[in-house]
Length: 175
Image 1 (cartoon, helix red, strand yellow):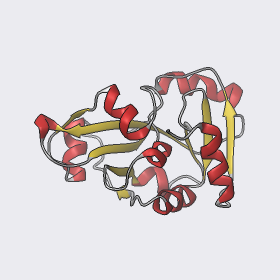
Image 2 (tube, one colour):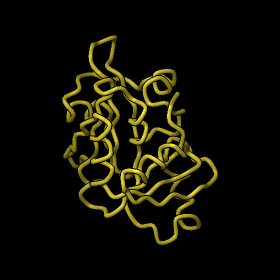
Image 3 (cartoon, helix red, strand yellow):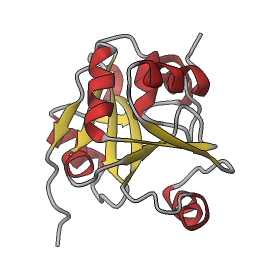
C-alpha cells in the first residue's frame, strides 16, 4: 500500500525533520497554487515547485525520471532531458505515476519517492530550488495539502529511503 499523507508526515517527524503543513482546496496547476498563497501560506516564504514525471521514450530502457523544478523555471522537456543526461523522454501516463509514486495526477511531488523502489525512479532537482530557499513547499502525496521542509532535510530524507536525488544546474532561459 502506498504511504498516506499522515504516515509520510509521521515518518518525517520520526526522523526529526521539521515541517509545516497546511490543508487547502485541491490545486492542479502552479497558477492555482499561487492564488492560494496569500490566504493560506501567510509568512511562508520559500521555493515552490512544478514537478514532471517522465518515462524513457519509445520503450527505451532506463528508470522513470522525476524532475522537480522551481515553479518559474521555463525549460522544454527535451532540454531538461538533455541537461539530466536522460535521453529522449515522454510524459509518463497516470498509471505509471500511480504505480511508481503512489500519487494521482496533479499531486506529483518529491515526497512520492517514499513509494518508489530504489532505482526505479531517478530524481533530479533544480539547483536553484535547493540553493536559493530556506524552505521549499511540496504536496505531501495529495494536492489538497502543502508541506514546507528545509531543502537539506528533504535531500537527507530521500537518501534515507535509498534514493540519491541529483541536484541539477539547469541552463538559463533562452533570451
